[in-house]
Structure formats: C-alpha cells, structure tokens
Length: 232
Image (tube, rainbow, N blue to C red; front, side, top):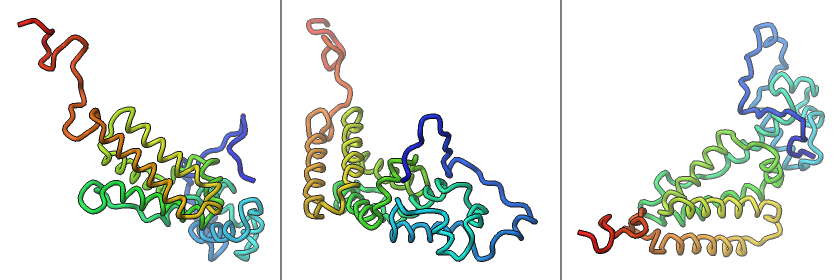
C-alpha cells in the first residue's frame, strides 16, 4: 500500500525532476512499442481493475507484454508512475469557465460543477483519494484544478481571513468525501454542497463583506474622515 514518505525517506516528485533524454545507443535498446504515455494509461487501467493494494510493476509489465525492467526505461520508480497516473485521472475533470462571476450561474454554479466533477473522478477511480494524500499532487492537471478553485474563491467577493476560511472549507469538503464517496448517495453530497455554498454566500453578504463596503475601517478614535471627534 502506498503511504506518505516515512521519516528519513527521500522521495522526489516526478514533477520536480527533469529526466534526461536517453543517449542514442540507449534509445535503440529501449523496448519497442512503449512510451511513458502508454505506460501511464495502462497504470490507470490496472489501478481501476485491481486497486491500489494489488498494484505492482510486475503485474503492469505482464499486462503490457514486457519485462518489469523495461518500464524503468521510462519511469524511475513505481512512485513516479503512480504520480503520473494520479494526474492523468485528474485530467478527466471538466473545469468551469475562466470568468465564473460573469453571467450564467456565477461562482456557485461553477463550484457545484467543479465539486461534482471531482466526486465523479473519486467514484470512478477509488485510488485517487489515497494517492492525493500520499503525494504532493502538483502535476499540470492538479494545478489547473487548483487555479479553477482559486478563481471561484476570488469571485465570491470574500477577502482576507474570510476568503481563506471559505477556501479551506471547500478543500476539506472535497477531500473529505474521498473515502466515503461510494457510500454517500449523490443526492446527500449535493445537499451538503448546497449548505456549504449557502454558508459562503451568507458570509459574503455580511456588512463587512457586502458589495460596496469599504474594506478598510477608520482607526480607533478616528472619524471616517480621519479626524478625532470634537476636533476641527
């Protein structure tokens, strides 16, 4: 079973390492018909079929009709391959529009779309939730997901601690549903999501966050004009 790195264990993310291209001689010796993309696709398929606990490089190689050592021409470690598979699965997410606050359902609709899509990925690929907890999850599709969520949070109009709190609440909600996604009916998930969004909307509508409200308040003992009461 894949877990987070043990104390003292050094594990470098596949997304932070530039893998040198093989020399001409090594390239001719590499197994024909293989490449990193095909291996990643086969990894996702095997994880879906057998689960994370039964996954091994040997089983993957057998499904591809090659030796286990052949895979290491394209990935350095099993962990690197699992990171690639994790980001490949996240690539199935349909991200909301670039401008969630303009027209349509606005940011609430965009957040519902993003959350339901994420839930579908977790339901289709049960191994995504544990891998997301074990790895940095900084691949290109993961970063695109984070950027979409940031845009939605920006569109709420919240700022400072309130925006941070809303962002944390949404992240916790999405990741918290990982282990129970197949046990929780979709209707219950959507109801909980509606409650979460209603809370963010209520917070955004409070006087200190409502439209047209000044973000900065006068200092203690100063009027709105910056003068102390009773002074000319």
